[in-house]
Image 1 (cartoon, protein in one colour):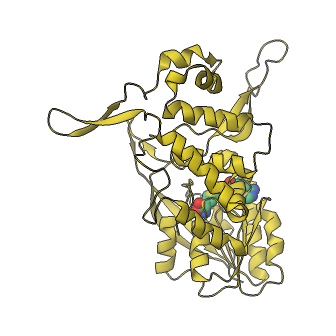
Image 2: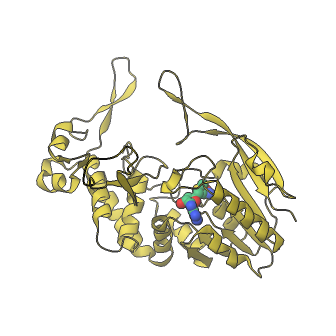
Image 3: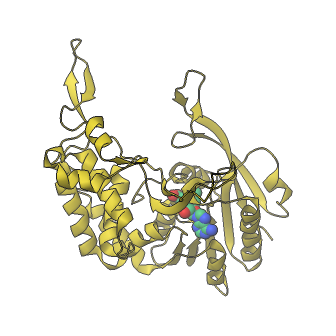
Length: 361
Ligand SMILES: C[S@@+](CC[C@H](N)C(=O)[O-])C[C@H]1O[C@@H](n2cnc3c(N)ncnc32)[C@H](O)[C@@H]1O
């Protein structure tokens, strides 16, 4: 099984290292993941013991909407997803591949599918483009780029239930065609107050709604396909895996109750990293990081095996709160989202340190 979508901070690679260092539990009957994201550790836990009770939570209601729809309304979810795929694949992509004079394959603007800044400018209102109007009024400009943005705008504007199967499947389509693993949110401009804007006035409000730019959109004959087929098979694995899972959309602290009285319970916590205050559209400050450590201590005293991963920014924050717990460190290289900007403006992979705190009474 693979994560359903890319998610910043995904734990895929580190899990292999945890496994090598023998840090993961041999057995558990209950598995709790308070910060689910793309669910890489859930996959490990499910494959280790498919019969366990799983409690999966994330404060992002929209990604939990996707898991809910895959669990409870699988056929309708697939119908909507593959309808989007069919329409999108029938349209021109922004770039096409050609062979240059040296016989090398290169990507160049597609004459029809590429961004048409002139048309987009005509539909611009403030900093936003009226993509739905552009799509409806200019059939000659039905290309993948406009399909992505008008679908994103419809999703943002709906007055309906954004957590229903249709919109969850639509969000899934957007996440698979949007810019890899980045969750950006739509910031609405606030009306100017009477008089002028003052220096420290907040000028926008974070709506929490998906607003990631489009990806490269170079798909050839499938968006979702994998070694397993057209993508339906991967979704089906998730549908099976989620049948034993309680899906929650609460603050992580409220998942602690699920550990009470459970014997042989494994809890894996992967909160937003320290120092990345606006990742995933939420602020996760040091007070909340402290609450994560409190959660770890409380659940450990209740008998659970608890692991918490985080980033080590080198100021001793977690060491000062270590108590009797164990801390392991790992050298990692970030390639998505948190890359390092070089002097010449290019980006390179960024080296960093991760920590893992393991609860010990
Ligand atoms: C580092 S990511 C988890 C990544 C995940 N381990 C994976 O492999 O993809 C952190 C997650 O915490 C969620 N989150 C942020 N604040 C939260 C809160 N107060 N309670 C629960 N979840 C929260 C975010 O939506 C995000 O999905």
